[in-house]
Amino acid sequence: MDTSRSAWRNTTHDWANTVDHDHLERIRQAPAAFAPGGLLHLILEVIAYAADEAESDNGGHCRIVLHPDGSVSVADNGRGTDTRRDEHGLVVKKPVMATRDLRFFDNPDTPSLPDTHPRQGMSVVAALSTWLVHTNRRRNGSWTQRYEHGVPTTDLRPVADDRTTGTTVHFLPDEFLRTAGGAAADDLARLATAWPHLSIEIDDRRGV
Image 1: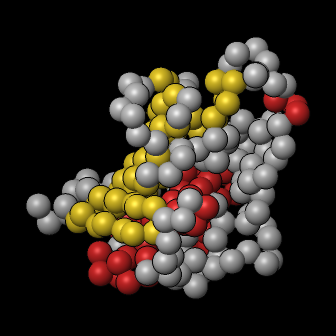
Image 2: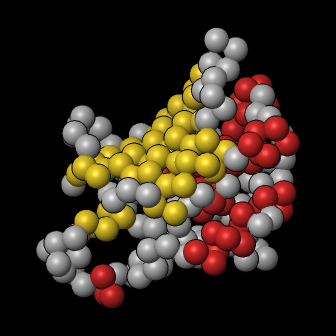
């Protein structure tokens, strides 16, 4: 049954806040602080969510593609980002890209990612990307949405059901991050072993 959005419990993000412009701008003003090491750190931020899904479901898979244009896609086979209908029948996706992760951002006790830098959340990836496309497949439907520097530039658009669940995040980091620190496939594979519940496949197409 559809319920009032005000009654939804906030666990990782605030359902009432669709876009936090101040939060995104803060990240954009300090890319070296929020993405130390450049592109590699951003990829690890995305994989961490796939690892959360894998751990909750006793295992999962993640496929990472390093594209020739400098963009990266990370696809997992989890449940898909939480998406619901409110009391008006409006489809609402948890605002993971455009608002802060309540568990990690500005939390002195936040866990570190495998690169030893603190985990801050998916909004860091979105804010520091020229564009990001989030495709989300759940049992109750599938949708896609595009962002530019963390701000949605399209509505949540339905996509055809392919009878799978999971999340795909395809993003183009800002040029500064692409040149400040690369992402060697070997380093990525080595660091990803920190998540034992998640099997990872890496497809590096940059030399193709």
